[in-house]
Length: 529
Image (cartoon, rainbow, N blue to C red; front, side, top):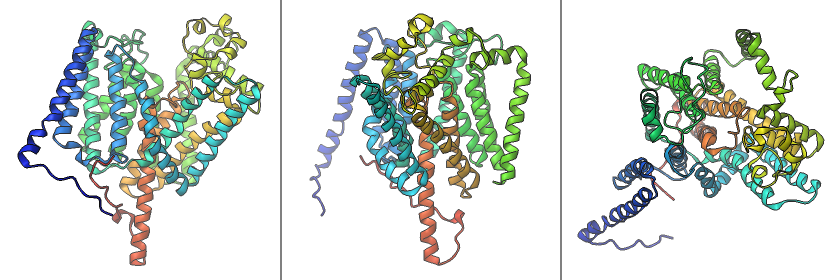
């Protein structure tokens, strides 16, 4: 059935009415920016007006006509919010990082669609259903076994933990065309220019940088990678945010170079720029993870996928770790062992990360085979609503950082192990590792050039998220991992379309078809809500 279309207005009247949205936007913008200036947030108003003007320009020049929401729109929405909220937190009088978590709620419908795609076409998708079904069932059962349930932290923590499967599945609804890929690489270059400009301002005129980036902090400590300099924040609120952005885009550019896209000189310039950003940020975890991901991809590109190659890679990693431990020297090796509780020391037990890991494992053992239940330890709900387990463990008398409400969310995995036990937390942990290895296996074995590039992006995204989660609470933070997780779904969806196109072509010709000669059907270039 064809629905009737609205009657078209006369040309002159239509052209005169087309200015009304622009007038309304201008009036609302004047009210918004005037209010911000009146509240003493003039600098924030100046920073905010730039993306508003850019958005208005794109809107009224019909530049959004090539986007398709649920395809390209989801990707650009999440990427735009990731960067804009990270920049806004540096200058804004209010925190904006929670916007990303709120956006996941309406986007959950696309994650549900992604679940049907993933579970219906892969054993890994079916395993995801089993793993997270087990995780939430154990968490609920643990809360019931523990006794009286505190419903507020219980449901709050469930909502918080739901972010992880939603983010894992969101990318299966994303499809990027060639024009969007070009826009993405243009954005990568723009981010690098912004970071280098902000870093130059930070070191050349620190007072001006502090005046603009008034919320920036954590950069007062010395840089362990560049002696004589402090940890830099650039355009972001903390060195770790700068390092996270730099490591992700460094790996993306490396994948681009490895796939033979872009000019050689341009790719090397981008790699050098992001390496400089990482060095000035001074975050050892992020730079080590990025270099490790690039090294693994380079190895996979040069070696054929055989068991001997895998054994050689394992031996090379073991040798590299041994060399690094030797280079650290006895003093730094002892400090590392003390920080992680590998060596007996009373001072080591005061390190927040060590304490949270050890107590998370202790609670998993104590309440085996369940856990403490949702909202009890190591998560946002426990921090805000229920600290009874912390008090039972004596945190209020033993640790100064607990009394000052610091470092309670310094890790991610102790929360899962403590609240859902070894079975629930271990299942999610192992699944994260399996997804990372699955992406690597696909990046190593597929032959189609674009498919291989997408799986390489999927691998670096999951590798950076998974290794970073060992020392930071990023695995459930959409501001950090929403985009890296999307690459996996994008690669899987493209592979699925490619296999179907190959099957159709093979059925048509009744013979072998070269994978390089087959392309999935193009995506309609319209913005559909």
